[in-house]
Image 1: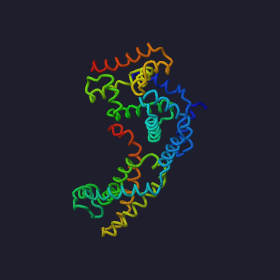
Image 2: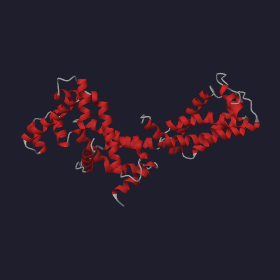
Image 3: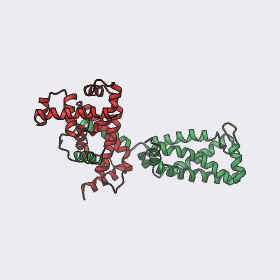
Length: 181
Length: 175
């Protein structure tokens, strides 16, 4: 569309002479849809986030064992990180991968309004997710070494929060770059 | 406070979850959008127009956080509307109504080839040509009825209609 045609169309848009309003039913339908989208339920958002984290975290066990627990017995990645960076750094990275990978996917699934409703509860969510994950590993017989708890938890909480916020901030530009949006 | 400033403020409130801000914005733009859609789309069926109208406001909802406060809201919203109209036209290329219109314009060209050509070039017609084409093909009015409705001379309506058809045919031949 050339610029003069565009300008002409813009003037047409602004110069509305049609004063007849649309049926009230049309307005009410739209208002109801917008209202639902604008203020989604917090419990549904938490459920959605939990589902994503559960699936993605489980998949991440396929290539990154946590506390010696792995999904398919694949340990090459763990051994490489462990031998290169040592115990603490390995635990930190494991925490980042376990919850951060879910945070990355969540940032692309959660929309603007869901994030707004989630607000500061996101921090609580990642605290809870970290705690639940540790309890889960313990119940499934994971080998815990006390000094590595903190490194893993720090990696999980800080890493996932940073990844979520950064990915959410950049997702629009990334999606338009990939022409998905 | 100017209209533009208050629109931007309303959008900001809307982004913070204020439904009343959306309603005010909607009341300001519902008729403008509907009027513009009537002029740009070829639907004599108001129900279809209302569907597109609703989709545009749902798109505004999805895109609202992308608005930059240093821009004019009407200009930005106009871009959102035009993008939606283009997407909508692309999606509805294969509708029976489109085929009917294409056959009227050039029956010799295969409907499938014709559909994409006509609709990508349609927006290059001016508003008057679009209106007359719409009345003639979608509403099945005679040249005389169109002239009465649009308060033009019948001979002018014939000329404009014929020019619009030629433009569309011309675009095909140039391809």
